[in-house]
Image 1 (cartoon, one colour):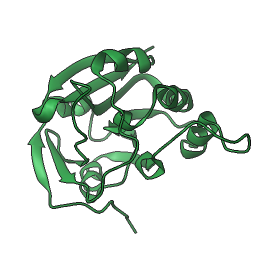
Image 2 (cartoon, one colour; image 1 turned 180 degrees about the vertical axis):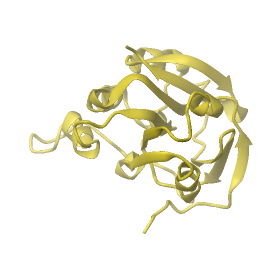
Image 3 (cartoon, one colour; image 1 turned 90 degrees about the vertical axis):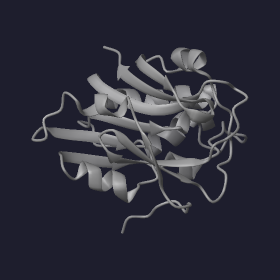
Length: 199
């Protein structure tokens, strides 16, 4: 049974970047997708039109993701390696990061990418959200894909812990295994990002 985060009713937002994830994809081509979660029924329904394997690794449910305090605590690397434990031959064509990077420290982002890197290939693309201004308040939005150019948004009923956003300039340095293809400034000083894995 699909589990979803508790939230308010759905609103929608057109996306200029979402179509770029799918413009070169044949609906008969087999895709492998990473959704860092939590799984949303609309997103699952959207990808059901493709021949694909959807991996959901709900990192939001693990927040806050912190460096170990005691020697017996798992390291950041171990935490992400456990969550991103996929079959060795897994290669993601599309990664949906949502606004995860607003809740990860620089060290956690580095550990996340180290765990993710073996599952990327030169044609991997990714989509996510960031902030234009570091003073931007926490939005607490839960996203889904409604159609190739339309995002669904719900406000979470409770705020996620660990909000400490990075601006686009900082993310370009932190997300070193991706190039920033495009970014679009949205309402409330949010940024929509389209990323491509570096060769």
